[in-house]
Image 1 (cartoon, helix red, strand yellow):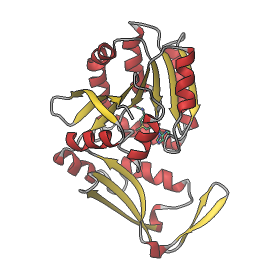
Image 2: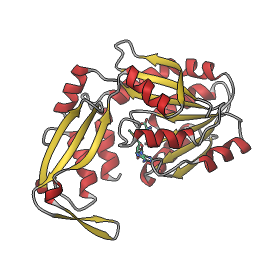
Image 3: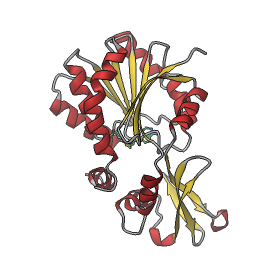
Length: 284
Ligand SMILES: C[S@@+](CC[C@H](N)C(=O)[O-])C[C@H]1O[C@@H](n2cnc3c(N)ncnc32)[C@H](O)[C@@H]1O
C-alpha cells in the first residue's frame, strides 16, 4: 500500500480522529431517510471516493431498493484502484465506473450528463467524510459541482461542524510525530521537502472558520513539481499546506446559497457536531 493511503487508513481508525467512524454510524442510520427524501431511482457520483469504505454503507441500503449506477471520482489513482477492488468484492454485480479527476479544476458535466443518458435520470452527488472541509477553494468546488447538475439532481455533503472543544482537540493533534502531521508531511515529502527544512504553524482562522496548517521555510528550498523545479523562498514566509473547514450551520447555509444551492434537508448527530446536508440546485 502507498504510504499516503496507509497513513490515511491509520488516521481514520485512530481514536482522536474518529470522524470517519461517526459518519459511518450516522450513514447507517440515515441512509434510508436520504433515499426516501429523493424518492426516485438515481445514479451515485462519489466525489473523492477514497477507499470506498464509506460509500459501501450507503450502497448497501440503496441496493435493497434498486440497482444503482455507481461512478467514483478521485484525484488519486491509488484510491480509485483500492475502492474498485473493495467494492467489486462487496458487490460483484455493481454497475460501476472509476475516473481520475481533479474536482477543483473545472466542472465535469460531460460525465454527469452521460450518466443520465445511459442510466437513471437523476444524479446524487456524494461529498462525504470531510472532503469539502479540506479543499482550499470551497466555492470553486461547489460551483464546479453546481455546473455539473440539473435541477432534479441532489448533492449530499457529510461535514463536521464547528465545535470549540473538538477544534481545540484537533489543534493538539498536529504535534510532532502525530498521525495528522505525518499525513501532511508525507504530501510535502513528495515535493522533496523534509520536516526539518522549516517550522510548522497550526492555527484556527476565525474569519474563515478553518484550521490552517502552514510551513515556514528556514531557507530557500528547491521543490520538485513533476519535472519542474521551483524555489520556495524563505522571504515568502509561509506556505499553506492544508486547511480543515469547520462551519457553523449558518455559515454553511451561506456558502451553499452563494454557490446556488439550497438545503432540502439536514440530518444532525445528537451532539450537533456532524451533519449530512442534502442540497438541491437553485434555478439560475
Ligand atoms: C477525506 S477523503 C474521503 C474519502 C471517502 N469519501 C470517504 O468517505 O471515506 C478525501 C478524498 O478526496 C480525494 N480528493 C481530494 N482532493 C481532491 C480533488 N481536488 N479532486 C478529486 N479528489 C480529491 C482524496 O484523494 C481522498 O480520497
